[in-house]
Length: 278
Length: 356
Image (cartoon, rainbow over all chains, first blue to last red; front, side, top):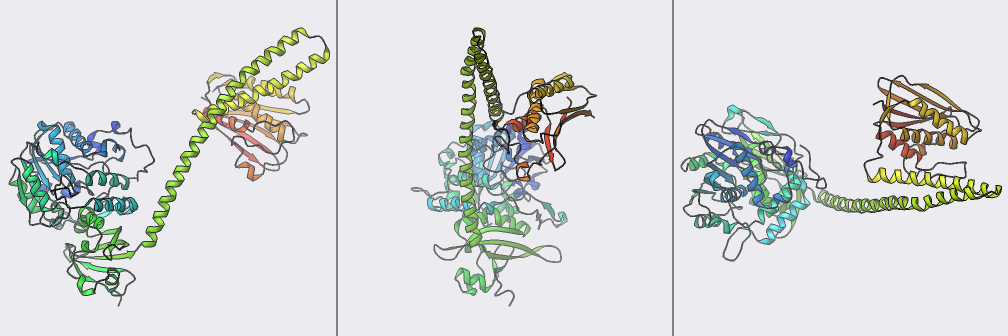
């Protein structure tokens, strides 16, 4: 996987690749009903490695990488399409259509929760339920709205990313993945975990942290489960509550887990919560 | 102690990222008493971007695999002060290979960060300048193409006019003047052709050729004859062994050979013969022009095929320096290339290309 220089033409190769190839799609499970897992900002489908397998008996599990992450094809990055979350939502729809799925249970973490919401609003017939893990429709505070960050803080984040391509570098050595809960799996060598192409990461960060999708929440008609962590600086409790209030009929479950990635730090809790919903 | 005053910040973390031990160096950087650091979460020592990055990326990676290399982050060393650091971390595992803690070091990276920032700035500048140069070069080449094209018309008028005058004139002197005019016009036409070839080559995708299967030998002999007529004092020796059919553009290959021969005449020892040899083997054509004389200086060797490069020429009438460049473009258009070897015994230019 090479670093994609910003000065190269980035477009034009999308059409050569299927959605399945573009997004490194992996399908598993023995069930009939489809459950799709979408990763959050900064990582890739490996985030779900402790959660997805729990559903393999009853569902057909679909995992994928957003463009720029994991094993996705960097050629498929389109600065225009991917300058908005709706572009990423289109990618999700492409994958679902290519697999010929309907009634998908969409499990989205962090920013991909909102991507899922947008996809479900655009093509409601493709989805049956939404599970939003650590979601946020807007990260910047506003009048009467607590997003968790000031505009200045977000600018600081984006400036930091601009100055430090290394922070998000793909040049990290192959990493060794541990499986503390399943030691029988041993440790595997993976060279794609949690690495994003630095240019794409910077652009994706801007799209994510400056997005405002609050107005879209009211239109959500699918049954929705919101999983909120107890001490998440990126998706604070106030945001979870806002989402529950805006999405009709939605359920908010506050997990005992802390931090932003309960799918990694407390997978059993996440699995339990989702099981109770599907 | 190794740990306490190490030249880096050193922390031991729980698998969840909480500090159990932090060394004196780190305490000093962060400006807190050592005792205060134990129990704190690592992310509390970072600036906001670092905390976000920790939550979305670095933390998950650390908790899953307990290993990281060279993560660039900022320590918050005061309300608005920061210290750029590079972080590397390694898992501590027990006998059952379970993750029981993490060793993490922090190395100051302020200088490196400044250096990187400089490099980025300079790269951006260089790219900007490159783009500016490219647009200027394109404009220049378009101008050359237009100029060359526009010069042909007045030239054609002069050709027509000389022909007319030739029919009407009787005086010897006038005829000689007309001869001179025609020679000059021919030269101008050649120069314009060269310029147009050059411009087409640069602006387009190289010189275009129409390859046809034909006999190469008569074309070579024809070119040699033309030069023998133009340079009666020079000797040309041909050694042709063309056993396979060749597909080539007659005009262009003729031009290529003529350019090489012209160079040999201009730069070679006038007392020695100029050699032309051609042979085919295994589907490839090898054609070379050789002369004796002073070898090409090493400095010139690197730039021989560049456009507008001119070496030392005895002949007072100089060309534009496009001959070799165009010859190499013609070679390229035929899927081949021209190479050169030059030493005190001989200078040899060789065209190597596929026969078809």
